[in-house]
Length: 464
Image 1 (cartoon, rainbow, N blue to C red):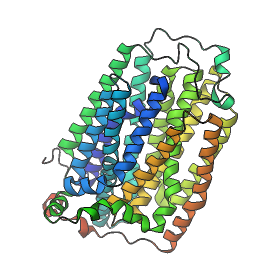
Image 2: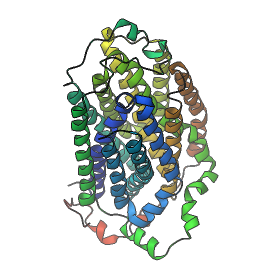
Image 3: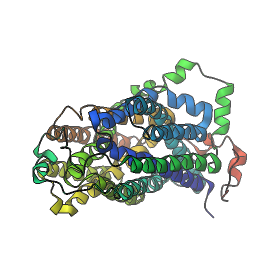
Image 4: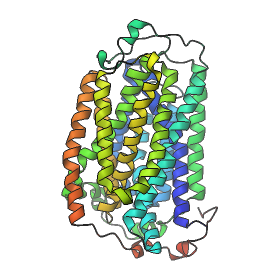
């Protein structure tokens, strides 16, 4: 029998797997599918700008009023609205749904991180283990399942778009503009990078809407409401609104959080580069849009497997060694992308970069999330809201200059942020090594005693 906490981790993970099967696939295609006037990239920029705004005040308010479970459900509904907007993409459909997604994005991720941190600390207390080890393990399991969403979402797009009968070979003069050889602001129009038939787009987006609705159903029915009593106590004994509103900003007084900003922003920069620049200037340009899904599947599969492995390895190697591996891998990829000239004859190389990038991203995601949970156990909601805010700022900046700066300079910016991260992160890690943060005791989470008594038994359906 598995514990109730582990069951809840699986439910959250499967829910996010289903939801991001849709969103991940759409995000990978935006720079190529809705390339007209930069509409697709602009919608992504609006999404992460909205996440920044929502990170400032929504996560603590929603989590404390609704609890983690129902905050996740509401956030998922916001993501589904973006898929609906892609049925008839245009400025008047993509931008409003991008704003809605962004407003729900930060509460969704903050609630997920808070839920996993609570579950990890509770289970650690029951098993007599170190809280940080169980939290690392839970985040590793989550990202192992969650990151595989990129496999299924991109597989759907490649199989559906692969039915397009207008696919043709790319002329040599177009190949000469791919990669960092040319500015990369405009991918030459040809039959392989043009928008697929509208019928195929509708088929794909319809499938994405279906799996998004399935995600909401899974979480609403099967996830335990472990902080239900804490949420009801908050509603009955409210703190002043300004106190909750400013919770995210108050945490900025902690110098450790300020020092982690470059690391957190880099996570946004590196993800946006792969989904926005690599897919457009290397894959779509040299191979065609129908290859984007296959390449991103490689990224997602590597990311998924490595997330699981590194979540378990962290207890033996420590976070610092893993962060160092990720930094070295990304550094090597950035230098190589500056000089590599993509050509269809070198097909395996197109998959090497996303594989290495996936390994690195697995470390950035699992270890940074776990680090925030370990450093700020008493301000989880505000800490993870800050995480989403600064990561989203990285996304916004990268997507905002996407249509204005040449690809070569984008790679230099990515490299500069990585080097800054390599300077600031070790400061926090060294301080934490010398002055370990005391975890929150198990009893602080066990307000709903009845819900935890049957912890060793699996419950197939929870009370809604």
